[in-house]
Length: 357
Image 1 (cartoon, rainbow, N blue to C red):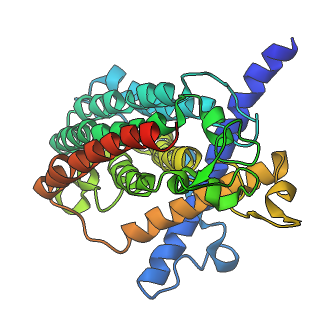
Image 2 (cartoon, rainbow, N blue to C red):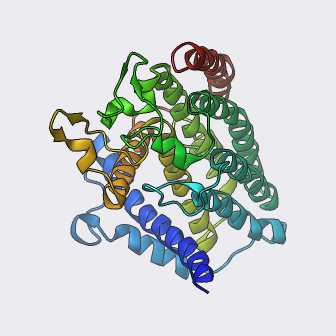
């Protein structure tokens, strides 16, 4: 009975977190957009516009269900569920703090890559099922973009896996802290196992992983259809892309999926490259900062702080850079990111053989 309760409460808790995060992130993005564009953003609904997003959600929930008469009713209705479920299930193997993980599996990283790829099927269902030329064009763009950028994402993660020698996300995070079962070398030169902190993160254990993380970050923006890679939703060309015909609760689920995907790729990058739940504060002599800032509460704090910082950068980029053309997007993927990822892959192999063994 206890196990059944856990299996019910954990997904509910994750869903509530995603919903709460989306409310916060939408408000934050509006404020960041206002700051970048030298204006105030939401100010009227509540103090400093704090309840504007809540008002928007309440409006969406009250809208009637509208399905275009010529749409494929089954595909149109199922698409938001498939898209959100694909992203939602990915959270099941993400470690939030030491041993605080819904499903601790030895193939966690592979599981995330496999299940999130189902997102593309849902987008195709939404575009085709809407029976709208703008929706279909947006879906085609999105799928071409996602399938292409899955390659640099996968190669960058493989480059990190060659260093960690494990697909278990919980173990990957442990390998970047003072409790690591292996010796940690800063830049492959001297043992910093007892020092910990930022020096134990993978981007410092193997410095080429900093470039790998940049590749991962850029490709993850394209996976999320975020600017400057938001051509599947280009308002000036496609109205709203694959979700043009959606409204009400269906649109809310598509919106939840987009922001949940932003958080998922951010926390995945944090776990694999940026120390996971481990503190950036090192032990300095008798000042044991890394030892003092460990445990469940601190682990949650550091994981959320790092992830939200990365999300803030994603939002900053959206309101700073112009949208790419389709040919520029594909050129960046196939001619720049993928070759660089292959080079980093080779460096990871040499680093593991020559430095870490």
